[in-house]
Length: 418
Image (tube, rainbow, N blue to C red):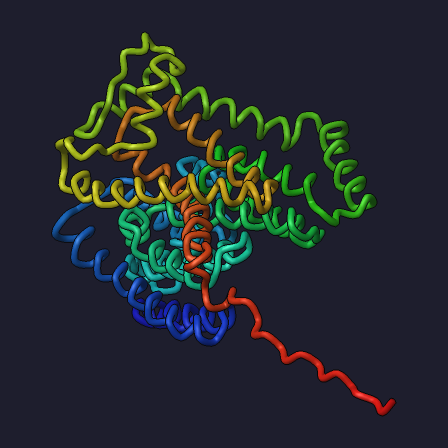
């Protein structure tokens, strides 16, 4: 049964490629994404679970998924949260998905779980292509981005086993994509679609919901064609939730965010995270906002080429070099997008900048930040795609699809007898 799930995941991937991409692009993308899908299965079997045992969270989530399966057998099939199993706090969605696969397969079925994660990773590549096209990148640059994301080392590694990072990146980028799409053309259905995405994100990595809050608000307020009635209705609904349910979700959510921020910035947690081979301790006197500049440099640019460490840390330097290139291109892409559509640029920057600052205040482990900044890397790569498009369309290097139309023949002058 495990291999049937793998085959079904591959079949769904083929369907997504054919239905979400145009014909010529779909044919090229299909082979790329099938290779990326297979690569993740190979890395799972040949590397993570054998040659180079890596991770910790992935093993934990697999065990919690087995606990959910046991709970289903006792209490019946349902979505299990931390109310039933306390250890599921903030990871209910990944563990329930893994549990569903294991329940179908009748056992641990780690390869089948990995195939689901690989399918999600490849679906994100398709979404990144469409996202890049949405903000103005041309077809060639968007396809280049698709290939890059498919084999980006950190993303490749952390979507080759039962990590939750694939869920996190997919949901974050999906929310940002809807925000940008809403800026360009308001649609109430996009706002409604955000509800299940944010709910799922809350059950994957809760603080990321707040990292997406500012871009989503700008995507709503800055929409070009937002109807006044819809605007008033949604604002009234938000105000009503605060006014009539003061002890319910909104306040509880803010309280949870504050608790997570304080926990991540606490000296105890930072010292515990630093007590590993890739840990970093800053002379900040216990204040998370002290020594901010070196923390920011480590958050954005580490691991540095001269650093020693584990095999995975050395492999991470490959992605770091790609990341440096993406930052360089993104700066140029941001300048171009500033001239084309400043609202779209602001949506992206309102995620990149606050998220980077928050991560810098809790910086204590290079291996951890290597995983955590993946949503930032994906968002910055969208700006890089704009730079690639602009470079190709400069005067003298104009793309074929941007060439001016051929000159038309002048109309004949009608001559009449005088």
